Amino acid sequence: MNTADQLTAPHTWLAPLSVFVRERLGLHFPEDHWNDLQRNFLKAVEAFGHTDPASCLHQLMHPELPARKLHKLAGFLTIGETYFFREKNSFEPMARHLFNEVIDRKRKHGRKQLKIWSAACSTGEEPYSIAMLLDAMLPDIDEWSIRILATDINPVFLDRARTAVYRPWSFRGTPDWVKQRYFQIDGEAHTVRPDIQNRVTFDFLNLADDIYPSLATQTQAMDVIFCRNVLIYFSKEQACKVISRMQESLTENGWLVLSPTETVYVTDPVLHRQHIHNSILYQKNTTRPPGRNRWESKPFLPPQSIRTNTFQTVEKRERLSISLPTFELKTPPRVPMASTGTPQPEQSREDPEQASVLQRAEKLYSEGRHVETIELITEHLKGQPAQGGEAFLLARAQANSGNLDDALPNALNAVETDKLNAKHHYLLAMIQLEQNALPEAQRSLQRVMYLDEMHIMAFFSSGHLAIQQDNISLAKKHFTQALHLLEELSSDDPVPEGEGMTAQHLKELIGCALEEPA
Image (cartoon, rainbow, N blue to C red; front, side, top):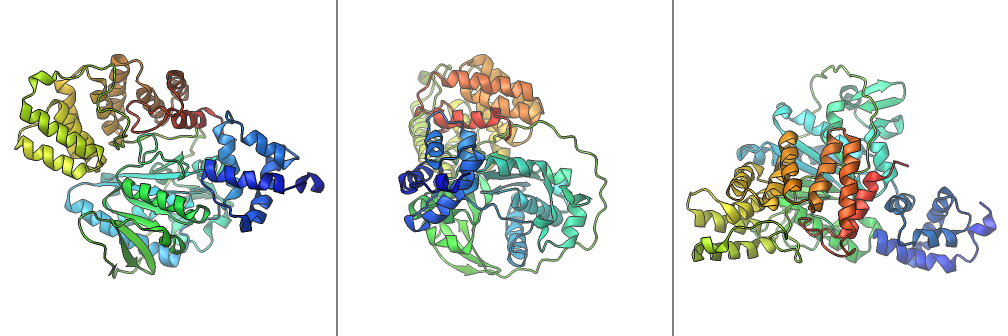
C-alpha cells in the first residue's frame, strides 16, 4: 500500500469512521484515540484488498454488506490478547471459590446444571480454561449438565477457537498439569481434549446489539458471566447498557466477573459487590439491599494425580459460524403472548377467576418478574397440575429462571391440553434442546413446522439442531427457509416467538451461519 495513499486527507474519513464503528459495532474511539483508530483501520484496508481508506469505508458502509466483513473489521480494532489461565494468581483461586459457591448451591437444590458465559472470548483460551477448571473440581462431572457459551464479535477468532489447536504462546505461565492433563501434544501443536471441547459452544455475538437475553443468542439463566477487558472499548453509556443486559441474563444469585477497570460501569442496585481473592465480583440478588462482603476461601490445590488420557484422532468437520441455541424466555414488548395463525384455547371455557389469575401472571411475566409469576400460578393451583395457558406460562417462567426440571412437565401438560398449538410444541422443543434431549427436540420441532409452516424460529432452531447432529446440508436447508420467510417482514419487525429478535438481526445471524469461514 502506498504511504501517500494511506495518509491522504485522513480527516475526511476518520470522523465518519469513528461514528460508523460506534453505531454498528459499539466500539468507542474518541478523537484523542484517532491515531490508534487510523493505525488499526489501515491494516483492515489492506486485508480487504483496498489501497484507499475512504473507498474501503464507503464499501463497509453499504447497507447490504455481508455481516461477516463488518465483524472482521472489529477484529482489527480490538485486541485479542489472551492465554490459558490468564492472570493465574487471581483467576484460579477466584474462579475456584466462585464455582464452589455455585456448585454447592446447585447440589443443595438437587440441580446438577451449570450455565456459564465467556463474553468476548477471543480465540477461546478463557472458556476452555473454565471447562478445565470445572473438570478438575467435579469428581462427578459426568452427572452434570454443563454448558459454557463463548461469544465474540470477531469471526476469525471464533474459527480459530473451534479448531482447539494452540501454540506455546497461549501457555504463558500456564501450570504444567493443565497441559499434561487436557491437551494432546504434537510438537508445538497443543489440541484441547475432545470432552473439554464438547462442553464449550462458540457463537458470534455483538455485545452492543440489544439481542440478549434471547433465544437465538443462548444467553438466558446464566449462573456466571465472565466479561473481562471488553467494556474498555465502549463508551460509558454503552458499557452501562451491556452490564444491564448481562444482569438480565443472570439467574438469581448468579455472578458477573469484570476486570478491575470496568467495575466503574456497574450501577444496577441488584448487582452486589463482593471481594474475592483480590478480585471484585458482582452477585445478582433482587431481595436484599446493596452491601459489601469480603469472603475467605480455600487455596487452589492442583490435582494430586494426573489421569492418563487416550486421544482419538478428531476428524475435521465443516462447521458453520453459529451454534446451537438454547432456551430463553424474555417476553418482547411488541409480541403478543399468542402466536398468530395457531389455535388457542377457548376463553369461554375458563372460569373468571382462572382467567384473572392468568392475566395477572402474564403481566408479571411481561415485566420480567418470573419468580413472582411462578409464585402466583403455583399458589392459585393449590397442588393441582397446571393445564393450558397456565401450564405454558408457568413452564416459560420456570425455564427462564433456569429450573428446567420443573418446566418440562408443565410444558408437556401445555401440549397435552392443547395439541394443535404450535407455540406450546415450540416451547417444549426449546426445553428439550436445553436438556440435550436432541431426538425429542427434533420431533417437537417437526410438529411445530407441521402445525405452522410459517414458524420462522422453528426453522431457525431446526437448523441449529442439524448443526449439532453434523447434518450440514439439512442445516442450510432450514436456514434458507427461515431467510425466505423473513422476507415477508420489515427489518425492524419482531420475529414471532423470537423473544424480541428483529428480522434484521435474525438475518444477520443466519447470514453468518451460511457464510464459509474466512
